Length: 162
Image (cartoon, rainbow, N blue to C red; front, top):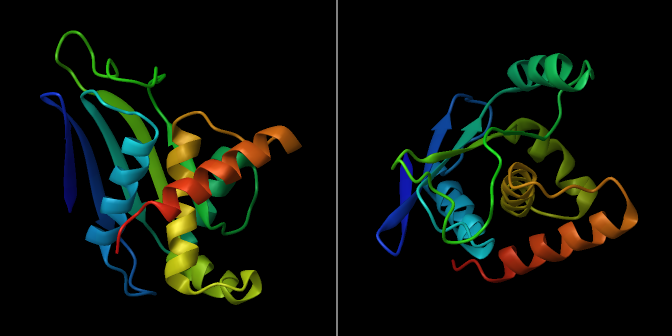
């Protein structure tokens, strides 16, 4: 499943894949949200992002391998190319900028949604946007960064249509 978002003759491509069967999800909807998040963040050149939904075993393995945590988590982000946000994101050679991968575990999202006072869809929406923002370089290592990232998440989620 993919979505192209055109900007001045250039495109942002979001590829979505569901590789889990624990939770039924609408991949096209989440791909659309990821594309919206990229647009909201000013990504306007030839760029590609991968959005992958996996089970707990896969995300636990990735979490251990890359974060040193031997447990399942809700979302992981793997930025690839450094991104200068704005209309010149794509390469001058016509090769798209590979933004990175966002990996979401719907089973973990389903389990933690009630603890966060949200629905599964609300939890997945937050995780998709959170992952996209991490790929674009946002972080939450301190209170200031956390507040800024949460403000961006709220804005993106508030401006995403039905």
